[in-house]
Image (cartoon, rainbow, N blue to C red; front, side, top):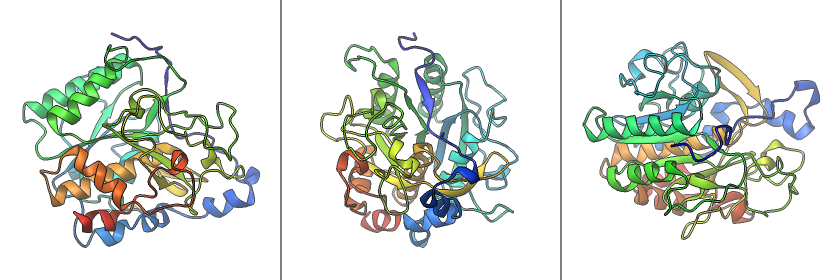
Length: 343
């Protein structure tokens, strides 16, 4: 089943640095928090209309901590994905999955410091080990449980991982089996799927100031998914003094109609991590994807019949324009209040 290298995928929150080694620009971001990020994308203003109630956000990652204060037990989906990690989806290998879950759907009402974008949404922890076999089994189980009615109400799938390098593939030939499952989720079951753009621009040795070449590959680059890059507080990701210049560039290997990234989200400052918190000058594009997933949850809570393509168009059309190349920032920074209002 696995036609890609087992080590082909990477999670997208890296480049942690010691406080003493931060640049002045990084230090400014380091001192901010998850609340500042949510303010930038106008999430609190959207909560007057929608908070994500009735929507489930599946976090495909290394597991989510059951001890995370922002994710109290009543927010845990009871679904136990059948992929080899049954009974262990809430026992994470590290804090990465909890970070993504809390950004998407955390709440501060039960002792946590921060709200997520959709604070009333439920979280479905889908632990996997990022091998193709594990990812495919996770999708198989998710789609089967959704089609059988075991997952009730709207479902959003958030993926904070990407291909590490270019691998020749043709979606029609099935070279990457994940593409088929993702398209099935979106087009047959009406499940919006969000992917991080990746952190591969500077990692591959490219000029941080450049919008070329494309470093968004595979399933993360197909038209049907919402692909999200990361930016600093100024909306940019081309400053060599900031790690955001690692954010992968478009237009994407397999796009036809919608160049990637579709949009961007800010990532910086203190963030939920595992059962605690970490201060980071950025959260990688890992921290950007769950912001868009939370926004989709806000939209689906307001209109459960909204189709994935309609949600994606709303996000692109209402994004705050940024004065940077679209292959770096897509259509702009997600704007929760504007998207919900437009709906």
